[in-house]
Length: 612
Image (cartoon, rainbow, N blue to C red):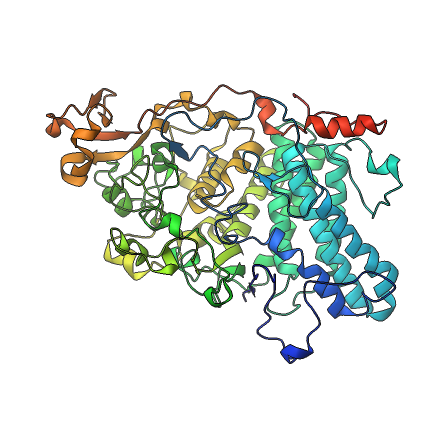
């Protein structure tokens, strides 16, 4: 039960391989004339318009070297990674301009969302309006409800992203005419009002969208999976930031409801090994993937994300020791309390064998100087790809010619959204207590994924189930987080590393302080390395005074050209220092001065983001 689609560069064409119509009989898929009743004649017309939303919302690995909303390269601003020198800073000043009226507007990497732009809201409102005012007499009632749900889904999707970046935003629930200045230049609406409108849209979607609209198209299950994401974000954000617990409860309950639409269908399962989810040429038939984006070199539809996992290319910021230590041992315990021999060894080879299998599938098991931390992420490259280190890479794993399919949304996210929403409802809102069966259906189902042959050959083992009666006692747990919710958060961190959730997660949990690296010296360290044995090339005349290791007692040793035998310890990231200090204002983005001035020029007021 997978979705497959291809976006063509230039022609922006969607290929529908299961379509029964002859290719030459198909209506155009991405262009239309919205005038004089020449469009919106039937479902083909509506579908053509709706197809235009796909590249914006179902990005996958994006295309070519473009990294907006793409894993690894796009989402490189979070507390899982460290780079050389000064860490990337939060912005500290209101920008001169922040906004666009273009459907092609870029996103904001520090906020993991869109800029101040309502073009996509307008596009969704046009779809809804034209279905109601033009197309309705030409289609069945079922089709009317389905396509209206499609429009309302994309509107809710965009507003969810805008709110996650800016908080309060102006809400437009209809197509606004150019001469309606009082509406066009309205000030921000309260966050709660906007998200209540989104909530209503999502309820309509779940009640009216088709469960099957063809193997390549948006359907109720895919929409429900995304709804679980957005409602979990908003529910937990409103709760942990003490905004509105009544709304928080409502949104979290919808997150649970939406997730259960997917889970109760029994259409997807954890039958795929972890590596195959991200480094397969074809995801067709993968039992965990609800929707994916496919790439085809013959159509010049390729990406670069596999290349940046190939063992040679550098990302610039790489997994740090804090992230490595967060991975659970395969006996189900934290390393401090594990019974596994050498649980306190943080060499890459040892961690690959003793940690949850997702560690070995996400990181190379040898120190790699292409990573600033020596812990190289290769989650999005196949095992074969790293055999080309030092050689010429094939197009599949080099440059921007990669053709591996990209999962857009998968079952693991759905069940982790579900269990977290249920746990928060149980702890803070009087919801049903979490039972072992809930854990088995979510976290333990994920942990029971099959292992691929490469992992088995290395001695990797599945992680023991999480048991409510004996939750890990993690010394690193924040005092204000329960042991159960802490473990749910850990599971998300292991599952989604590099995928774009981490910054949004720590923002909604009110934990942006994790981005302050002065709170833990491990942020500036990589794995334990025996440099003379594992990476002798690091000890050269050119690296004298630069290469450093840190001993277990915290003392540092600097390479001086003669002390090879003492260069054993945690790798110290070169010249790494903390980012500039920041305040809670960075939870939300400011709007630009140009946008505020534009309002003023028209006689209206646009409020600046709180704290800015």
